Amino acid sequence: MLESILRDLECSARERIAAAKAPQYLEAVRIEVLGRKGTLAQISKELGKLPPEERARIGKLLNSVKQNLETALDSKKGQFDHEALRERLESEWVDLTLPAPGTRPGALHPITRIQTEIEDLFISLGFAVLDGPEVETEYNNFDALNIPPHHPARDMQDTFWLTDGHLLRTHTSPVQVRGMERLGPPLRMIAPGRVFRNEEVDASHEHTFYQLEGMMIDRDVSVAHLIFFMKTLLSAIFHRDVEVRLRPGYFPFVEPGFELDIKCLICGGGGCPVCKQSGWVELLPCGLVHPNVLRMSGIDPEEWNGFAFGLGLTRLAMMRYGIDDIRLLQSGDLRCLTQF
Ligand code: PHE
Image (tube, rainbow, N blue to C red; front, side, top):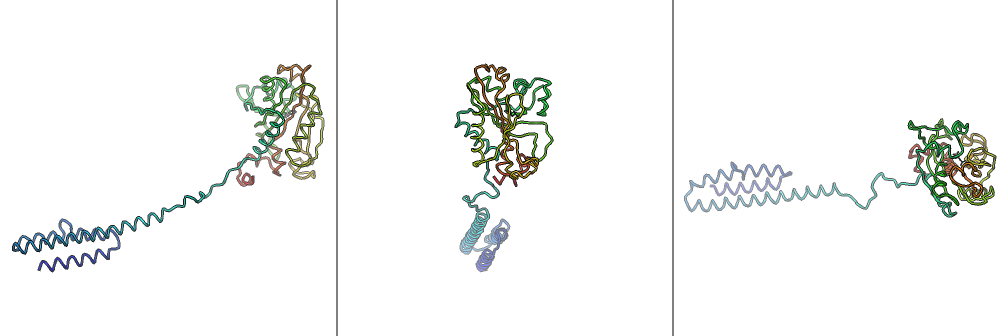
């Protein structure tokens, strides 16, 4: 009797194991059949009531049923584990050779590009590239450039003053003062950098912009040298002929002083907001260094003279790339910047 019960039990348990759709069904069978209070445990309690040789035979059978079911449960469990692993691998699979989504390659800012191009040009002409602080002394920014206190020329550049008497440099000319004091003549240097003016912001004015100023000090430097270098500079920048005009211009640190204008490349001279409808853009103020400036930096104007120029890098980038609003350059607006 017990024998057929055991055989039926094994048979039906095997069917349930084979049909199990998830691991928890296996667990139910295990508890019900093999558990401490399960069917097999109950049957084994009956063994004691059997005569000895019967007991040995049924006991053996019971053990083999138990082992068979354990093996069946384990192998089915193994199948579930394997399947789960495969599903996990499939869902977590990544192609490491694919480019990451959403990344854009970076690019140099248009001002940086123009700056390095001009630096390369001047380095090839024997100029040093000098750097200086953006927070300057009043002396370096004004006095040493022949702009004494109360001189009306100070009003030409609206200044951001700091509470301790320092200021945000209004031009990169103070780097030239530092260059003259530190290196002395003969001197060929350029000073690219960020400058600040307390200005109303509009399409052609920013409170923060970039300049590149330069100077050459040597014996017998003339306006002809100045014009040669400025022409070399402009043809290297624009890779084409640009129309220029030279006007007298007043800057306290040069004498004579000039304004070099170029025909507006945005509108071709017809008039637009960038050239303030005039057709011309002031691009290159320049002149021969004032003797006072040389003297204040410890250079004897009887022996040495030189030229200096200031280039608006920001304005130049606008001309070169046809950007009609200066505010775009520092806006961080990717719609503009990704075009470069
Ligand atoms: N420092 C002047 C400015 O920022 C530019 C300049 C430089 C003019 C050299 C003449 C000579 O306005």
